[in-house]
Image 1: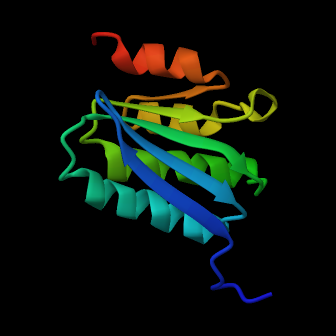
Image 2 (image 1 turned 30 degrees about the vertical axis):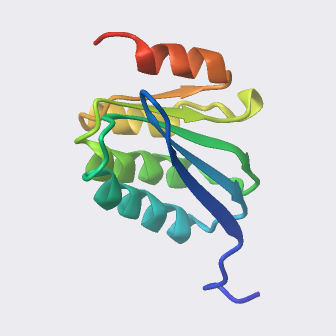
Length: 125
């Protein structure tokens, strides 16, 4: 398999009170880090300061170390956003990336339920 192949889809939408990014497929670890970095650059020009990242259709299984590094990249690239909600299948919640991002100053929370994620994004604070 070609390591540079794009095996995932990315869709960005701007909703009334938040931005939404949906990722589906099999992104490699490096592609995931690059995607977070590029979202950080792009989101600097968005009207919204809150982001919902829907990862429920990502089929790649990342190691604990990779999840930690993803959280660090989120902290580095998305720190300018007030809140970032990550939506994953409930059985895949580990909180590793969330803790890494939060320890490094970025307000990231992981959710298994879309309504709970949206409620947190819309809450004051």
